[in-house]
Image (cartoon, rainbow, N blue to C red; front, side):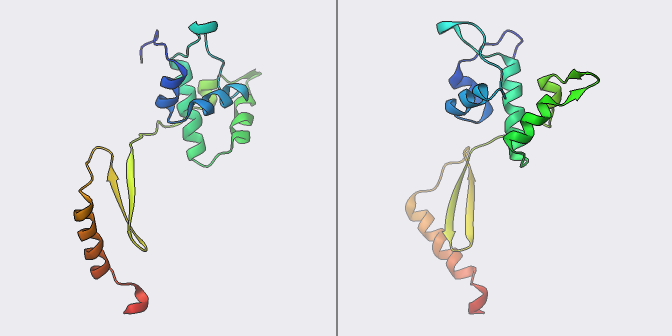
Length: 139
């Protein structure tokens, strides 16, 4: 992200791993600054991306929006912390995965960078798993 980068709401949502509706909700709730510009020129900048990713990371750590809101408003040294400082967290690496339930209690997670095998091959895998992963009550 360069300092002059500009993003539409769709791009910001994709970069933050949320929906457009969530972006708008965060703006409405004061968790994310309003977009820059006016009318059709409204856009978001790198600071919005960083703030949104930090919000998402804090939620993934189990923090509620109310906790995040309170943390944003906590004064430090007589001044309110800047949003970036208040929400500084380790960046989260995101990737898309497909979750397949192979058999009861057995899941297969496949990276979005891999192509799933055809249904016939998956059926063979299901049969193999059912034969090799016996439930405890059967043993």
